[in-house]
Length: 109
Image (tube, rainbow, N blue to C red; front, side, top):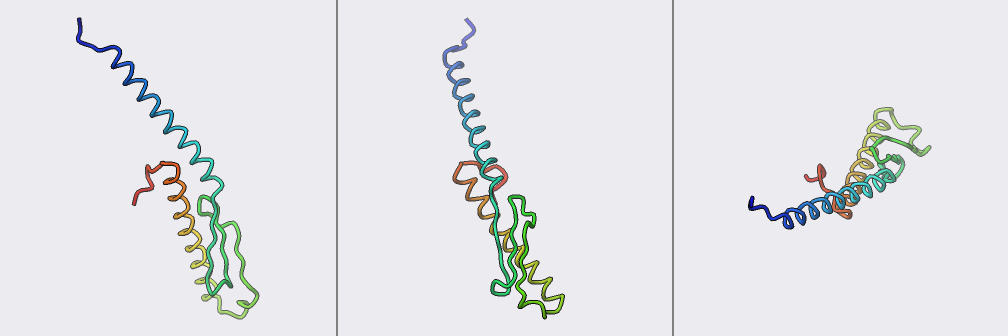
């Protein structure tokens, strides 16, 4: 006799495999949800609005005509602020989606 409890080892492997399969399913669900995430941010009381996709890439930018007389520097600062707010909002959504699905790797602060 080798002292091995074959039944215990079989149960351990089964539980380990089930855990891996559950984690893989949560990761697939997260990837699907992540791909659909987007966010918006605004600056200058909504005169500049930026939209970003799931990766934080700018997908739309709206600058109200009332900003047409602003100096270029003010427009640039407002755009950067709006994009930054959109990206921050996206990060909150990504963390919430990860928490909801029990996927944390890499999202802990």
